[in-house]
Image (cartoon, rainbow, N blue to C red; front, side, top):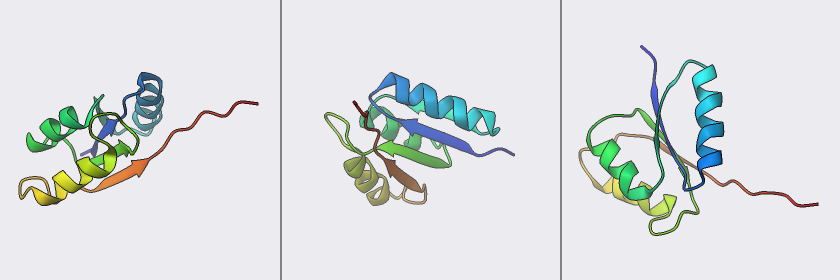
Length: 89
């Protein structure tokens, strides 16, 4: 059985990059573009691990983690925050 990873980021290119890399390693990948969507997916028990952008509008990755950990239905799901930055120069 393959782990199902939820990738959460408000930047579509970041989602596609992580989705491609994880899929190449044979993970099942579910995606969300917002914290609200991520919480909904987690509440339906559709993931084993959450990779979160920590800098999203409306609800950042830290708040998503707080809500996951405070909910008895989702507190067991591990979450990992990431931050994508572009370099110029």
